[in-house]
Image 1: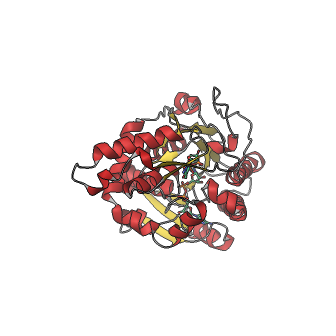
Image 2 (image 1 turned 30 degrees about the vertical axis):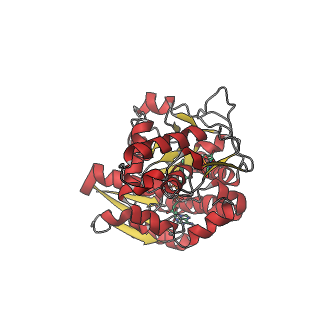
Image 3 (image 1 turned 135 degrees about the vertical axis):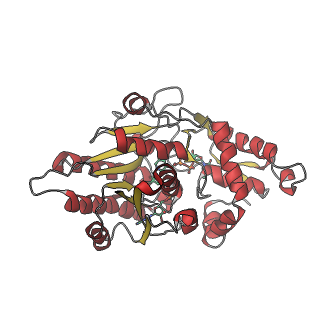
Length: 360
Ligand code: NAD
Ligand code: TYD
């Protein structure tokens, strides 16, 4: 039975990945999930898998070398899937240091512990050991509005402390591959959306605010473009890269789905209006009148767009979920999990929101 060590599995993409993997492999695999449970990590995301014998949760910080070394010593880990990171650009603008600590130092600890556990005296690695570093398209910087795509060969040009810290972590992975022949892959994915996403990010924030009749904050002119991918498609891509990808390669993952932020907000409003029953009191609250333009994000990247040609041609992965369908599924999930949203937006979140947004 193959053993996976997943870091950051209590967050948005990590928890979706764990659900995807158990849905696909059931009892054929074992997953150990290491997560520090920061504000972004939520054990509720994994309630359905908690009782499984082939699932173990370890609360630990990826910067804690002793804790990570122990996990490798006590388990014969075959695959590492490294999600754990600080992931929100706005928070990185306010508090950059924690991004450097977790994303750079934490990745260095993960790489080194895996290397110490796996490397043979002659510098080779046993067949089947693989480390997948989950990264972002934001490392490539910003594209012009009227053209161009990010390829695996696009030079790195990060602008935010978040993307700079992810770029640094990618460089460490490259250095391990080049120096130690360490068996790894890097994936650089575009913006994800779907169930379990924390409402600091655009799509869940807009859904949550709209349902309460709160203002919908749009940064700048609302015309920044992101390439949105349904999170389950990302989980599938990660699995396919580990199964079929060539070691030491980078694969870009994207949705072929570029949209301006303002378009996204209008689609969410329309979809909410379609999905809410006529007698639901929230229906009267959801309206385009809630859209409020606010001060732009500092250093706001204008456009991201991935060319996912390599992963399609080499591995056969393509995005499957059309945006309208993905948004309906996402909104349906948030309707069915009102308590989840209430729990994550109580307490600390309110303080974050008030500091970040000066609109009510
Ligand atoms: P998230 O913020 O929802 O989750 C991050 C998880 O990591 C949380 O469970 C948190 O508790 C955990 N974590 C944070 N610091 C830790 C530490 N020091 N030790 C152990 N665990 C720690 O993030 P996400 O959106 O799920 O993103 C996951 C990964 O995917 C990140 O590496 C991110 O850079 C990358 N990524 C995200 C997107 C996106 O659109 N969200 C797109 C491309 C790539
Ligand atoms: P976000 O979800 O934070 O992802 P990222 O910055 O990693 O792309 O933001 C997506 C886009 O939406 C980005 O251009 C910033 C914008 N945005 C808003 O206009 N208002 C908001 O309240 C948020 C959170 C984001």
